[in-house]
Length: 522
Image (tube, rainbow, N blue to C red; front, side, top):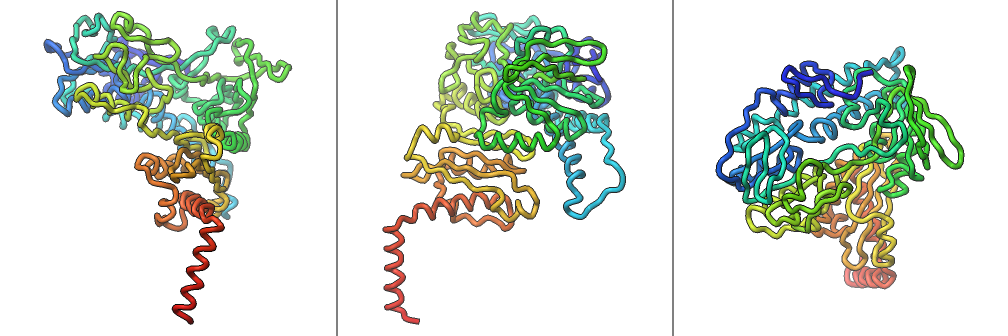
């Protein structure tokens, strides 16, 4: 098992994501942190200086430069940020491999038998991950952004005043700036944890051999996705979550289904767990866990800490720039994404509770309009869905069941089981549902939770309806191809429309039919 740190390249630069330093990771580094890179000489001032080359920073820089603004982009680590290097891209590559492994075990139901045991070569699985990530990294490369007209500076950026930033010994003066430094893995206070070798999402993808036993601290989206992936690939996985259920931000009905799915894949879920100590010897790591008044020991060959994200606000001298921030919640912004320094904006994980790549993208587009063109776009107007990529997936947008309950009779909730959809039955994938919360008076969709194998692909129809103000009733008139899982949305619309057919309306329509019989007898 590889240690949770990277191997330095020939210039001495190292990063946790760059292990092992094979040809794929060397190609990644050459794109997103080239060692031979020469920082440009800055002009007298920039229209926009962006600190952080993750999703938010890249969108800000590319958009501003494309519109003719003199733009600088500063990155101290790997361009592409978490999403490319240690988040969305590598995790989904791993999930795809694990789903392929699970599919082979479910073939007998379809009359397909494979001779012999299924062999999983974890080293090849991870090499595929590194290869695909390196290929995608060209889109986020320093060379590409230079070609877009962006001045790319590699080094740590620090505010030296309310109007300037220093990086690698050079001072960059700006008309506006954007803080897009993202977030990092939050580490809980557990006695002894700092003395053992543990992984986070920033280091888990450096593994080249499969841990026989994996303990995961945290039952949120990252913990659940990786728990299922490693279990399907052959690890004995234990999730330790301090709450009463996994994915606590999601609808409780969704959490129940995902919990059952993980357990079918062999994951043990220990809810209400308080870890009192961590220790390590030459054989394994031991976590002492208190739950429901009893104490037990969980032994593992690897430990993954997945207890959330903390904003990267350290070492920026934000106070010196007049920017209010908090170590836990990040940079304070108003609805226009301005900080307390009106010349400085923020976007992405560093200032948002919704730490998603697509949310950072949307926020960056608001910053471009508001900073450069005196725009008045509001972050509160964004309709942002999200998805947990377990199997089945859990997608959500808008209000949830708890929020709908507080609105009382003003909201009508429609729930359709995936088992009522023909395509799901034919696929033998009936564990799931769609729950829609609809404003009774207008028929506008206020929120939805969708649990299905491809929920992340399906939620966009609902998000579009919410963004465009299309009522659920009108979705009922949209023709969906048969048979598809997305018919569940039309089924919900039909159910909602039937509910609107009051006894009085039914009597009226019945009367019209009777009149028709008289005027046009058979």
